[in-house]
Image (cartoon, rainbow, N blue to C red; front, side):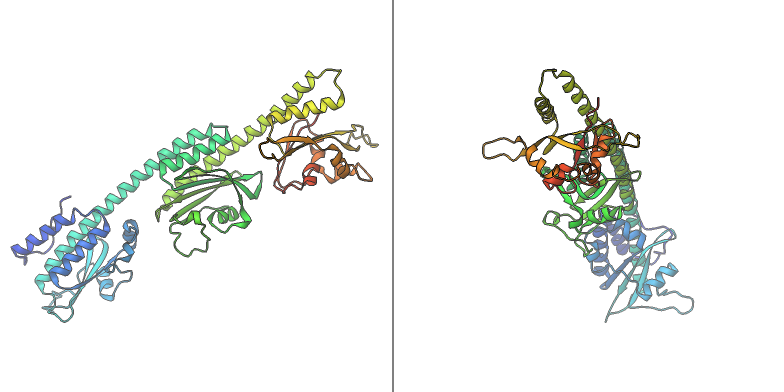
Length: 483
């Protein structure tokens, strides 16, 4: 970039030494690549040459675009205009005007100079001389030349910043598109989630990325999958009601939240793991009216999430929610089909000579091989209809086989044991066994369907979970034994 004095400015009173200083200033200023360095160099030159104190004010759109971390601590950069600076900003000329008609003033101890590019004011500079001779006509002409060069340099830096941001947005959109394309066809949910957090961590440089998945339609308990600079972390359980942070706020309001400086008092608690995080963006994962979870993006630098950046990641969050929803549907359907096919195969392979008890054991043995569970049971019902002839189940529900996973002892493996007799003491000990279908309506739902079903966390307990005292968010899968 070549910075030369504007041919339209009034420099007729400058001597050769002053021209030399001005050209040298323009050359050095062009090598300063940050707003901080440009202002520091310009102020140092002005204060050195003219033995004065200075103040700089930048117009808000311009300062917001270029402000870097720590710049607000610059002592010469002010947020409020002095009356003289405000007049220079409003009239777009040096104040006071030493050549204002017939009332010429030879010297002045304070002047304010607008930083102009065409008709746009980028800011103003005020120079003060205390207990010294005031600024002369020649001083003001030279100062105006310096101001023109500062304006040109600042405008060049602004354009470069805009170009860099545009290039960054294009790069982000490119990777967002690639990530979206790669996950929308991925029906393996675990692989999908690991792929998303890994790509976001690697390609965007986030220090920590978390995806929290809701269990069915329950927002109180979520499963957290995350990655940090130490690698992929073990799955965690996130209890929404026990937290007070941006993630909990996002879950509560179902809206994005961006915090660009976590050091400020923003009302959120910060855990030890978050102490090195400077900014955070949390986005809800919503598909239609269904809450899927949240995407949590953390950065070690402040001001990482500008409005345009947030919009880009909102687009990605919509695609992630859709991909997770597709994977969940595929997973549920695959599980239902697997159980149905396996039960059909097992029952079809049984010999007519097998005892009833042995058949029950074989079914539970087969289920245990390919389904993770903590407890399993087989129930039988009397399939006779009620007196109304509507074909409703009104008969007793009877527990005929139960198996519970026991915790391993030292040097032992997890094994299961039958507890049917113990369960009978709790379940069958009732005056009216028909009440079991009323007390546990989820069992009735399974009995009246032809395909396996999943218990939602918001549903009432079924007998097994009630007796074992499972937490309300536990999951249950039931499969009808139809013939």
